[in-house]
Length: 159
Image 1 (cartoon, one colour):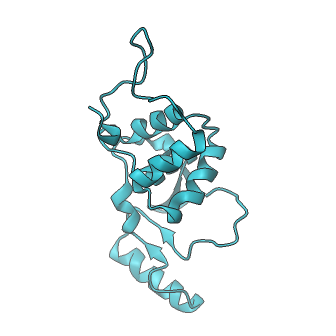
Image 2 (cartoon, one colour):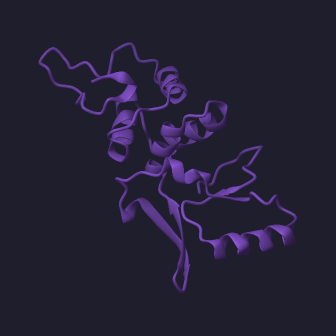
């Protein structure tokens, strides 16, 4: 969770793993607080990386076998770039680029490739990155001496 000032906040909490017991507890908490039944949302699991490490997650608290972990900003940025759901993710992507001090398209691509080396940045997210960084050069093209970003990731249809 990033401390940010926003007019609108999410109406749910994304979780990657939830058991039937956690879901039942979430329904009870939601009913008591008059929150929607979907306030604990496990749909985010479709954006999980298979390349993250333990230090990509901050442990917020642990009780017995249960722990709450929050994705570090770089991992969260990569997840948002993979999802790339237009306006739904645009503000988060901008905030995360600032938080992570990402200053170029190639830096954003490098973060994405660390967590999703076989995936592509979503077209809407890639368009947002291009607009933000106003790049005129192709980050997948090497310099005159052949150095540049490795082309193996397949992002944006490059091979």
